[in-house]
Image (cartoon, rainbow, N blue to C red; front, side, top):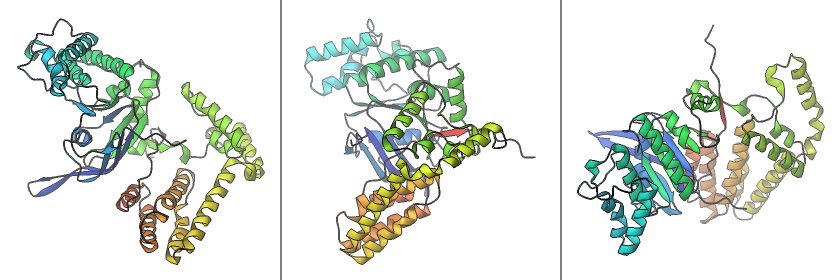
Length: 440
C-alpha cells in the first residue's frame, strides 16, 4: 500500500536575505514532512529561522532555493488552505469581535445567515459568547488570541500555521489556551505547524518536535512525542523528553550505533511472517511506554548475562540464510543486477553508472540501510526515467557522487530534484542521549 502524501512537504529549502551588501543565510537545507492532521512544533532559539520557515510555508516569503508543497500543490503565494495565526493578534481594531470573526466569510461572499450561524457557533466554542459587540481594545490578551483563532477557523482551512501565538501571554492564560488549542485540534483534526521557543510548550502540544539550530537554521533533530494526552509536565517521562530535546550534540547518540541486539536483530534471522509478529509485539511494548526489547549486553560482556547473550547470538548465525534480512538483501541484489542488465541493452555508460552505484551500500546499521534505499531510489527514479540514456547516465553519476560526498543526504536530495526526480522520503531518526563523563 502506498504511503499517503504529506499535507506539507519541505525539500532542500534555503532562504538568503541580502542586507547591507552582504548575504545572510537564514535557512539552509531544510527537509521536513508534516502528515495530514499532525501537530508539529518548530522549536529553536530566537533567530534560528522558525518564523522564516513558517512564512515560507504560508507563501509570504518564498524560499531562495528548494521546494515547498502544501496539499499537493507547490507553494508560490498565500492560499486559503493555509491560515496564519500571529503573535500580535492582527485583529482589525475598528471591528467588533463578531465582525472580525466574520471577515473572511464575508470576503468569500457567504450568505449572511450562514455567516451569522457559523460565527455564533465559533464564539460559543471559544468561550467568547457575550462579547460579540466588544472591540479588541476591550479584551484581554488571551481573549484577543481566541478571536484570532476563531477568525481562521471560520474559513475552515485544512492547515493552521501558528507563529508563537501564546508568547506574549502570562503563564496561566498560556496554559489555558494551549488546552483550548488541543481541544480544537482533537475536534477538527487540522494540520498544525506551531512555532515556539519554549521546550515545555512544544512537548505539551506536539506529536513531533522539530529542533532547529541557530543561524543558519537547519533541522538539528526530530523528536517524536508519544506521551498520551493530557500530558503532565511534572511526570518523569515528560522531563526525560525535556532533557532529550535540550541535549547538546555531544550528548546525543543513535541507539543502533552501539551493539545491543534486540528485536530487529532477531527478526532478521526469522522468516518474514514470524519477523512481522515479533516486530509488532515490540511496537506494542513501545506504545505502552516501555523501552524496545534488547539483550542485556549493555551490562557488560564480562558478566554472566552478557556472556550468555553473546553466546546466544553467535549460536544463531547459521539461521541467517533463512531469515527475512537475507531474503531482502538477495531481492535487492537481483533488482540491482536486473537494472544493470536492462541498461546494458540501452547504453553501456548507463549500465556502468548503475553498476557503480553498488558503492552506495557501505558501513553498517543505519548507514547501510540508507545506502540500500538510496540505490533503489536512484534506480527507480533516475535510471529509466525521461531523457536519453546518456543524460540518464549523467544523472545517475551525479546522484551517486552526491550521496558518497554527503552522508546526511542533503546533496543527494538536491541532485535528485535538479534532475526532475523526487527527493527521498523523510525518515524519523530515533535518538537517545547520555551525559558524557568529564575527561580525566
